[in-house]
Image (cartoon, rainbow, N blue to C red; front, top):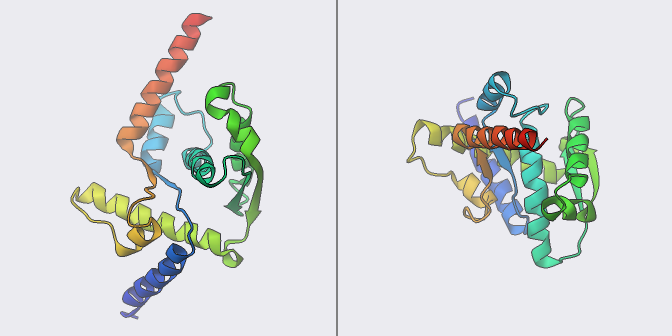
Length: 193
């Protein structure tokens, strides 16, 4: 009924309080999928299966950085929502990061990331928290597009420790810059051949 939205919001804030007190660190990314698809159709910059690769890249790289603050030699396992449509793509993208030619930038991925698994989100609270963060960040991004002065919700602030753990935002401007840089790198690589 009409009480559902306020009750849902109260329930989510209560859950975010549990997440915040658990000492979890939010790492994530929001990608403008519409702009990503537009660039895919007009440019060769993104030969990727979907825009989730940006989120995975950010989670892997920032996860290694954050864990290194506590233990510089800790190994990490990635846990992903079990989605048959994208699971294999996550595995392939992680493998690409582990075997990337640029060892100065990606060499530690192979050393630090020791596993990836896929779980049912209905029985895994960490994935539920990630889903909640994704929902709050997406909502905030849409509000910011409509009104640049929009403020973050209490839920978003609780999940990001008052904004300390900002999620990455790959909006239209960031994606276009990334595409332009990729095209330029491809051009330079072709010139060297």
